[in-house]
Amino acid sequence: MKEGTVLLSQREFIQVSIEINLFFQRIMKEHLFFIETNLQPVEADNIAKAKMLKQQFEQLLADTVYYANGVVSEKAIQSDEIVTPFTLRAEELNAMLTGAKINTQITKDECKLSSGSNRNYQAWLGNVVTNINNRSYSLLRETIAFQKKLLALSLECKIFISLYDEMLEHDTREAEYYLQILSSLQNRVLPRRTLCGELNFWNNIMGEHAQFIDGMLDPTEKALKKTAETSAKSFAKLVEECIRTAENQILQRSFDSTEEIRKFKMSSAEGLLKCRIKSVIPPLLADHVLREANHYLRLLMRMKR
Image (cartoon, rainbow, N blue to C red; front, side, top):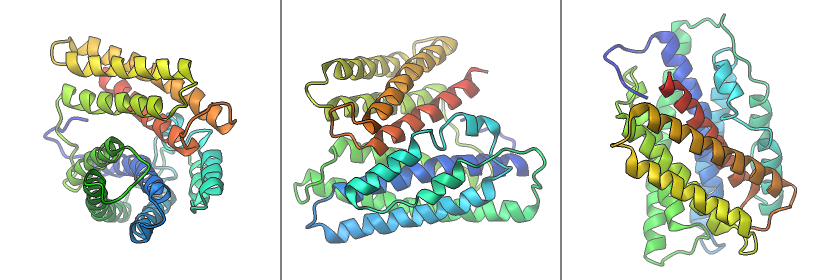
């Protein structure tokens, strides 16, 4: 997203804010769910903290969904970045397998979202959205501090969490990216980023997803691991070559690589839900990274115009 000198209109501010929050509030609450379910029982205080933050993001997301009907664009709905056909089943399965609670009613409500051109964008709705942005910003800062604390403790071998340290760092970078967007939206503008700055952020994210999938697949899943490894190398090359590649070419190559990993993530999510893939990948994590690829594809489509 690029920031111009013109402020967002009331309609743009409301729609962009709603769509950004629908996507990222869910991503953040799932990061916290993965922390909650991967800390060891001895870490009762940190488990409780992760659960509390997760529940606060769930409340925020429920509020956002309430005001999203008729505001969210058809493109955002059709992109499957908000929910996918696998999300509800993945939540139900992960809740059953871990014993940790997930508010699945939010997902059911999101599946019913519709776009609309007749929504009344009066000042009251702008005020509601501003409040949601501000609440998200405050909660996000607390979440970032919590994740950084856990990463530091893990790096010092003071806690054991069955998530990669790199995954905790990865999650924190995503949270900081979201924080930057919210900070700009508070001023009714979008973040200022260069093309390579934006592409490299997301290409790094996609490449790390491939690395995580590779590392969490059972050693016997050789074909899937090879696909993940190849994908990780593809995104690393895109990051390395961005500055010296023509804009239209790097956009198209990023799109093609993201479309490929999206297909891989989709088949992986389906395979995990049907218990056809040997791994330590939670089904909800597979759906989580699929939604991120869907979101990036929609960003790329906008940038290619």
